[in-house]
Image (cartoon, rainbow, N blue to C red; front, side, top):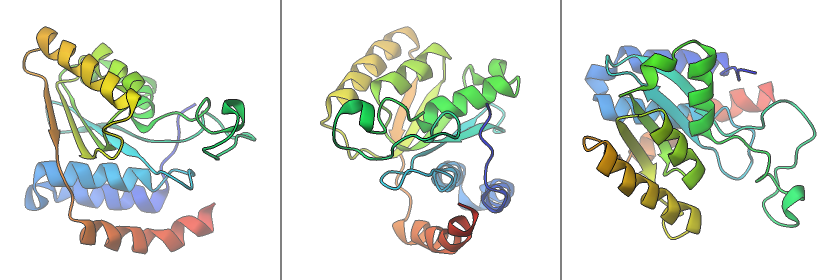
Length: 192
């Protein structure tokens, strides 16, 4: 099932994409990843991702969400089956899944992924399996977590296979991001 972006957020994504040269490509794409995260129903951690083709086209977007509407928990602590962790689909995986559903699989190879949070090991596996050329992230708040260390091992090995692979941190102006969060928080609350 393909997850649908909130229409107001999609409109803003389109606006940023149309003005990407003025904003700067990397900043525009990272801003789009942050905007995609606003679609998430996760009350604790909203993550967004956008995949950009080698022709600078948006291939797909994703955000962390449950695989389908259901009675899934969003809590982070307790017995694992009672938390969100076994059920939530990460933004990176959703973006890749959406590309496949849109018949854009061939555009994944040598594309770039922009995500507002450094990926876990399972998402890094997806990045490497579909032969993405670049991974750009904003936050690395889980740098010392086991899954993040494992992701870096996968990335290090992938660089031996695909020597032109780029992994780079791009930090978005937090004031600009807060402006968007404030703008969309009321709209999104009405739609949930």
